[in-house]
Amino acid sequence: MENTLLVELSRSQFALTALYHWLFVPLTLGLSFIIAIMETIYVKTGSAEWKKITRFWMTLFGINFAIGVATGIIMEFEFGTNWSNYSWIVGDIFGAPLAIEGLMAFFMESTFFAIMFFGWDKVSKKVHLTSTWLVAIGSNLSALWILIANGWMQNPVGMKFNLDTARFEMHNFFDVIFNPVAVSKFLHTISSGYVMGSLFVIGISSWYLLKGKDTLFAKRSIMVAASFGLLTSIFLITTGDESAHQVALKQPTKLAAMEGLYDGAKREGIVAIGQLNSDKKIGDKQDEFDWSIKIPYALSFLGFRDINAFVPGIDDLVYGNKKIGIEPASEKLAKGKIALNALRSYKNAKKANDLQEAKKSLVKFRAYEKYLGFGYLKDPKQIIPPVPLTFYSFHIMVGLGSWFLILFALSLYFTSVGKIEKQRLLLRLGLFSIPLGYLAGEVGWIVAEVGRQPWAIQDMLPTGIATSQLDSSSVAITIGLFTVLFTALLIAEIKIMLTQIKLGYKGA
Amino acid sequence: METISYTAGMMWYLSWPVLIYVTYKFVSMNLEHFEENINK
Image (cartoon, rainbow over all chains, first blue to last red; front, side, top):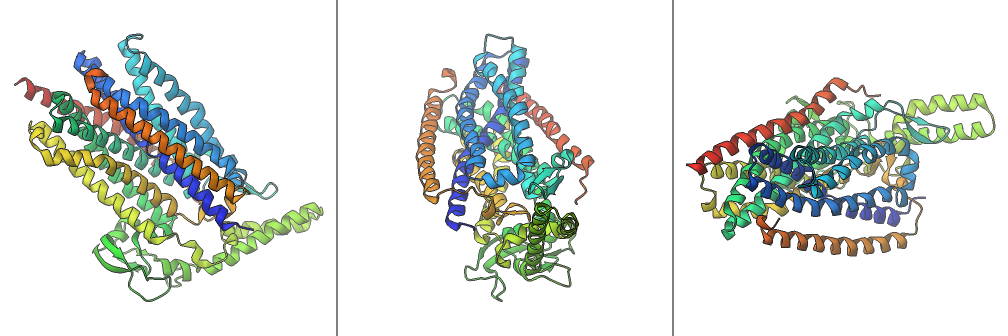
C-alpha cells in the first residue's frame, strides 16, 4: 500500500539534498578546467603572476570541492535509507556505474587533489600541472558515471527483468554506457558546469574591477573565463538541443509538460515566452495559455528534426490519439495490470512447482513487460508530471542560458578592446549573474527530475513504489536536520569564500 | 528493445576532449592578443 505522505517526504528530502549538492558540483566541474588552463599558461610562460592567479582560483575551488563531496555522499546513502525498494529492484544496474564512479573517478580526483592543493613547491611544475588536469578530468569522469546512472533511469536500456528475483538485471553494459539519453545528459550537464565556472570567475573579477582592486588580475581572469564560457555555452546549447530531442523521443509526457502543450499538432511551434492558464485541466477545452509568443514549427523541428512532425500533447498522451497511433493511458494501465498478474501467477506456479503454468505466465509477462510500471498506477492522469513547475523551470533555464552567451560575448569583446573597466553596467550584470548561474542549474534539474514524474524508472517503476518502508515522522525529522546542517554549511562556505576573495589574489 | 548506436555515442563522447582542447586554444589565442595590447 502506497503511503502518499511518506513518498512526498522522501521525494522532498532527496530533492533538498540533490539541489543542495548541485550548488557545489557545477563549480567543481567548470572551475577545475579553468584552473588547469590557467596553470598551463603559468607553466608555459613561467610568469609568477599566472601562478598567483591560478593559486587564487584554486583556493576557492578547494573550499567548494570539500563541501560538494560531503553532500554527494549523503545522496548515495539516501538510496539505501529512503529508496531501498528502488535499490533492491534496480541496484544491479544502477549500482554498477556508481561503483565505477567511486573506484575510478572519485579516487582519481581525490588523490590528485591532494597533490594539486598541497604539492606546490613539493613536486615539479609538470607533475603539479598533470595533477591539476587529472583533478579536472576525474571530477568530470565522476559526473559521467553518475549521469550514466541517471540517464538509465530516464531511458532504461540494456537490462532484463528477472521474474524469479523480481529485479531488473543488467544485460548489456555497453547499451547502458552509450544510452543516447545518458550521453546527451552527460555533455549537457558538464557544459552547464563549465558555464557556471566561467560565470563565477567573471562575477568575482567584475567585483574587483568595480572596486578598482587588482585590476590586471581581474581582466586576465575575465579573459580566460569569457573565452572558456563563450565556447562552452555554445556547446551547452547544442547538447541541450540533443537532450530535448531525446526527451521528445523517449519521454513525450515530459516534453508536453515542458511546453505546456495539451492539444498535440503537426508543425507545432515552441513557446518562447508565455503564462500558463492556471485553470486549465487535462481534457477540457480551455486555452493552454493566458498569453504566449510562439516560434512557428520550432517544436516539431527541434523535437523530431522534421517541421511536419506531430508533437503529442498531454490530452493525446492521456486519452490516446488513434490517427497518430498513440495508445490511451488507460489501456497501458490495463496492460500493466496484466503484466503484474502474470508475475504473481508465475511466482505462485513456481512455488507450487507447476512448471507448465509458470511457463505460460512467463510468456504472458514478456508480452506485456513494457507496461509493467503502468500496472501500479491508479489513474491514467497520473502519467502527467506537474506542468507549471516543469514549464516555468524549462523556460527560465533556456532564457538564462541565452543571457549567459550574450554576457560571455560582451565580456570577451570589451576585455579584448581594453574597455571592460568602463562597462560598469556589464560588470554589475556579471556579478549578478553568479546566482543566476546557480538558478539555471537548479531549474535544469527540476525539468529533468520533476518532468519525468511519476516515474523513478521511466515506464517501469513509479516513484511511489520505490521508497523504503519508513515512518513518515522519521523522514520529516531528517529533512529538518538536513535543512539546518545544509544551511550552516552553506553559510560557512560563503563566509570562507568571501574572506578569501576580500584578501585578494596576492594573499592566495 | 531499443537498438543503441555505439558509434553515435562514441562520437558524442569524443566531442568532450575536443571541446576542452578547442577552448584551451581559444583562451590562449585571446590571451596572446590581450597581453600584446597591454604591452603596447
